[in-house]
Amino acid sequence: MTPTRRRILIAPVGALIPAAAPAAGLTMRELAPCPDRPNCVSSQAVAAGHRVAPLAFGGEPTAAQARLAAAIEALPRSRIVEQSPGWIAAEFRSWLFGFVDEAQFVLDTREGVFHVRSAARTGYWDLGVNRQRVEALRAALSVR
Image (cartoon, rainbow, N blue to C red; front, side):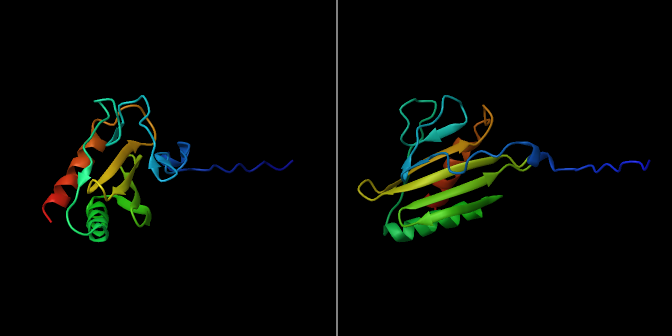
């Protein structure tokens, strides 16, 4: 009899966590409501714990979207996964474990704002990271 060789597969920690479906905040180019967990903020939320002000912009909407896209890409570990006129979807990875947060931005030309939803894909609490990220983007847009 010959000994059986066993192969051991070593996978990165992130590979052991099942991937959630991308763009969970997207419903026909509208922002989905936040789940009943404190890891999501939205400018369209009714609940105070999830509510965040939309991102105001001045000037031409196309130029404002370009400024927002640049501000998103300037954040560490960020990437735009989809963009079309009036719409941006982005992902942000945490530094240590690589957890993914996702954000969607919808242009509202009547109000002169981008409505935003930013949420953790997994887990329960995000330590306020999504709210802080939205506020960082607001600050980046206001200095331009």
